[in-house]
Length: 112
Length: 112
Image 1 (cartoon, each protein chain N blue to C red):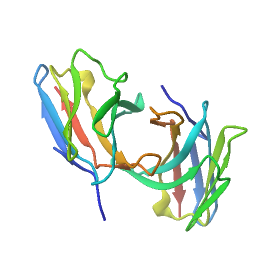
Image 2 (image 1 turned 30 degrees about the vertical axis):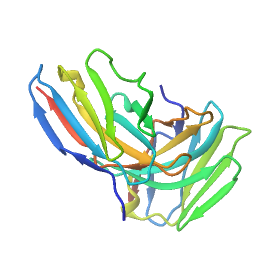
Image 3 (image 1 turned 120 degrees about the vertical axis):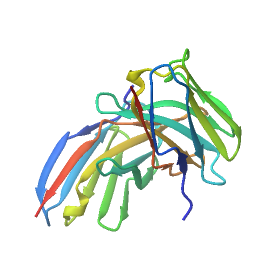
């Protein structure tokens, strides 16, 4: 079963614009991780944000986490055509048997 | 740069045949996951291990799928007998407890 739900399902923007993707989840988490997947390829880890963190940056990526609303957002600034991919959030739940559960993904298309 | 490796990368087989997929997790990672990705179901968690012990395999069809970690450097996923509905990309992933989870390149399985 899916823990996270990404919104929107698909996003089309022009190069240079910012892209924002949102993720909502249902249960308590230890951390939340964002991944990128290019068509036909594997998943690339982008960033991990822990439950006691509110914001994290990595290059052109900015991730926020609001545990009270059980939601996270991924912002890609100054997008490039190479950012075209599907983006997934994954939650690492609490407890000794925590596991990484994925959302449904946002498909981002960046056009020239 | 340490990576998760998977073999084979592609497998075409006939219905009823046994399929074994292998994964070498990143050295030092104590949590290993098996996921399956299809267009219809997205990323599904099949099984995962911590310190080589199976923690949850509720996502696997028990009658035909089995997952093991014979040692810390090898995880296997076996399907016997295979069926056309098993056609998918199977990913192995590993990570330290509570840390970033890295994915392998996947095994693309086609069952005819």
